[in-house]
Image (cartoon, rainbow, N blue to C red; front, side, top):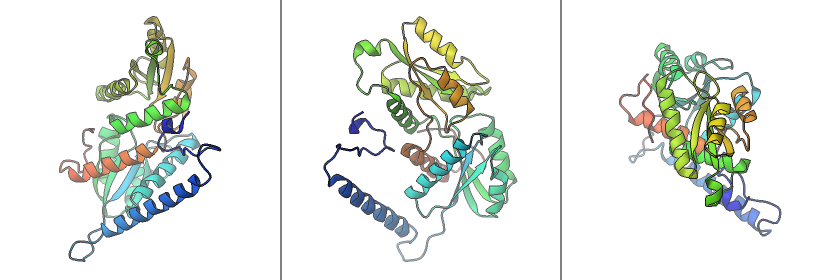
Length: 300
């Protein structure tokens, strides 16, 4: 893989890949970028008349929760990336189930402060429509509920990067493209709007790759990944990759990856584009007059 094909959260430095002074120049540039970001963040707290602006509402990342310890580690890494992008923004974590802190406990710790809840969920469904708004409404904190992360072009950017990491050819001939396809493996939901959101992401990824992308599900919906692979093979698409439409590793990702006949990409994880998307949803919720305690519709 060439440096130009590396995903945004991977360093292009490799032994022999750059001249000896390249690493020093990169470290200097990174330091200057960090200083600039921190200075800009500090200045944003001061109004033009020199008075201090009110503190920004806290950002509460709402994760589903998982028995797989890699999921919690991934979410915590994503939190750190969000904090690096906006150093003076208070960022908290709450889980719907299975992991601590649970969302009601996180909200209770905020007292009557203002907060924006950003679901680390990829489509509309029961958790987005019921669980999270109910927890927000029951809290003393003044809350707004942001839209789920998907669909959005930044998710497609992440999916593409993960596929390239797994071995998807960045430059594909027309002949190879005619026999290739992708299955977008998602968790699944009985909510029809969840399927609409997942199909939209599949459409955006298909436009990015130039090959068919078929949504498939680990539970609660059809087709399964294996069924989607068989259907593509019947259409002459024998080189099928599985794109992991999960925020973090876990049982669903593992099961879907095992059904891949060719390559299986890693979950979205703590990719740099994911951190940008979290902040985008936060900013959207603050700008929307209708977002208080109700999730906004996902949009770009």
